[in-house]
Image (tube, rainbow over all chains, first blue to last red; front, side, top):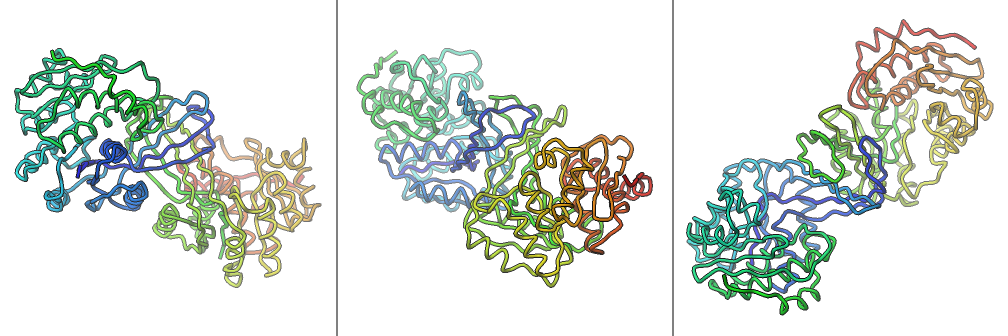
Length: 303
Length: 303
């Protein structure tokens, strides 16, 4: 079972309006809401790819109830730790004219030390094959919260996949996790660096593997067995939000099957899944037919 | 007791952002939420002026629970009819730079015939001195819903104050209510017309009285005893949202004391209350000291 960790769960609210005008008053023509946070996108994609998933995170207040209810409605098993604070919302206002989204992110609720301990205490280690951690941290948690999870996971022989940037990325690498980042996050952590060199550096710090998405240049993976680059599939137009999460889901699924997967194969699947996620308008969704069509076409070479 | 009717109750959410940019992603620096809808503003102002108030309306879902909870926290007694739909939200995004608000109004939940009947059935007529109806109608209700309430109220010897525009204004006048509108709403109902003539016309249709706010030109009241105009107080800068609701609250309070109040006196209080509402940043609030200071200064003359 793939455990997906979303420490800053949200209720993602989408408003459709004809045309957003600053200072104007708008009739919302359609309201959609669903559970959000990068970890939820990972859970949705992993479930779409046929893997048993357990969504982990914090929920509080009536908004937390809505998030829990929506995860249930989406068929995602969840083990949620209650908190005193109110789960945050995000509001995306989408223009009818051009589909452009304007986003408002509420600050997350503060998580107390006791709530953080309760989160660890209820972790069902025996049922987990891998833990995928992604997304922002709510106030109150240590900056190296993902590294802490990765260390605890190793004590229970569970490998972690951590999607993070900056210091959190370095801490997760040192904790032995499989780390996932985009090129900007990699450079935020390591300074100006070539993507393959940066990936190698993360493995040198202790990461089991590093998978770096490099935008239009494809993806790079490094482990102690080597470094690989995968070219992107054909030019794909759509919504890039959630493409990185689709990559994380594929990496987590691969690690669930084997602690030492064939990274060139994983890269091919990750590139196909990311592109198939771009095709769908909503983050967390994946065009399964496109994924299956593209996967054998991805060119991967060792560097 | 003043019953305030808000058929399209809302949870008013206010987001503070540094600067709203269309297509941008924004960190919300502060989230406030409270019960909203014009009738709630009327209830808040009436309570601030010291009158016992009963807030009436529909609530549904978790958002409805938040609205009910906030009314309770605000010290407003409420008698709310449960509905199957989810209570709507409004989101106001306020710029830190200039205080400008951009508003998003969710559509209201549909109210069924059974729910509309349940609303009437639980009306505590024996405890009401006046009923103040204001704000938009949710889908599912007849366009003359306020007139229907006013007719039922008269059967129980309760007078209604109806704040409405267009056809709903004319229907309320024919139902014998005290009608409240602004000059634009009056003209929407009657076509191009002088405000005093329009007010007289509404009384001719059957309205007990008509009170029309005329922006910077003050207010006009008409009854079968005459027509009066009140000049505005000194130029007031602030938030005009809720000024009309403060006027409705004063009119309702006057009618609660006497079915035939001295309309020149009521006009003076209404002008002072509207200006005192403009001084406060949030609709439904009122600067009580300014209200008391301005009230004796308002000039009212019979036309």
